Image (cartoon, rainbow over all chains, first blue to last red):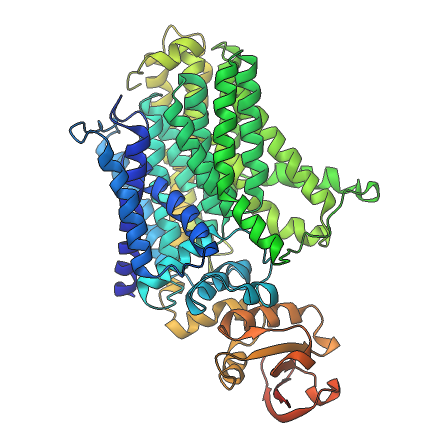
Length: 449
Length: 188
């Protein structure tokens, strides 16, 4: 188990090196630290390698170790294009005891995930078998997807990452595999610190990150080893970069938003709903800002993000792949599902035993930014994306071809995670706007609070 | 997580109480300090109250949530690798050992069809999907007549009308009732 864990760590070191290169190429040396540091770079690496691994599978690659190492080395090399003399500044954190408590909590979670069996139904029925198939069939095997894989047309970023882990481990250590999800959670917390601390008071950021890490549902869902946690991480970090693009006019943030959006699209079908909504809201907000150029650049970034899913969709269509929702259609006969699904999604999102006070925090912060800060773009970005994502999920449940109660009971808790975390992670920035006002908030670096 | 405690019990209740106490302290400290540092801002009171509430609720929950994770880890860390490998199938009420034992008799590049008695009902999906996972790289086909092998749960493959070479049978006493599993090789 220890050897497997170290080998999985080696794979993730490759992801981090790749992310370092891409992040450094995009973020560059200007205003160091404003677009994240090591943790953000790791997430960029997972996102970029995940998307490219999907594309490589489509071109016949088998994700053997040398292929992954070459890919990561090439991506890492991109970082050398930029000036190496400039080092990013470290964001200010908090008292050592707060860091120690958070780290201790994460260690407990990490130990639990290290021993976690692959027991969640969809993990062994759908996601991990695809990863095993990439290893056992030396790449993407159309026959396996057509005959044996359930939900065969689901995007394969997560199985591709798992296959890389299996390759490095030299076997199928499914317990250790959960460390991949743990590393995502740890890097997620780190990236939130890196991206939010330069923009909001430390106490606002700590309130958010501590609640995200301690929220029971995040750890539980990481233990499921499904695609929901990766999707939520990619989508909500894309949301942070969308905010930076909107509020600070930083085109590098838009580029990173495109990277994470591509990964969200490649992670799970819902990614298309959420990412489409996010780009639509950002486009509308830039259009209202009367910046045609900014809207066009946003549109171009959205088209780039489609690289995460379009090639897979073309391949899946060409091979007649399908999923359990294929027969879904909106029917007036099933209109009664709408209030039931809406109530269930709201209840799951507001359930303190799952998400503590994250949704109330996001909603209240948006209202405070609007009322006291005079902010419009930030609150609208959060509220519109959240509300539209919820409406889309309700429509999916309305149309589902699966037994309605079964579908709702088995998925509602998971699908709300992405929009919920998206809204929550922007709450420190909204609170900063509530306190300092929308215009001053984006220009000034806040005091520690 | 596989074995989170269903009920708090004494320790859980104690940790909840401790958490609530700590949360209350945090709420007061954060509220006072934040109001002071935000003095002069219109939103100071509302923002301080919101942040204090969120931090307090997190601190209140943290010991209990951590304890639940520790309890889960105590259970999962005691599992052998074989037990952990079977956990998924067993949680879906299929018998991983039977599937593995019969599946091993098929060559690695074999194709097989999964069939079941109507009595099995919806469980056949879990049976089929666990086989799809555990028996890789063997792949499934829908029609028994097109398969090289047939894996069956409580249904004699001879009743399928497909010419067979040999049928292996395995009877178990597990689950709500004894089950009979079959592995049949299709005649080509």
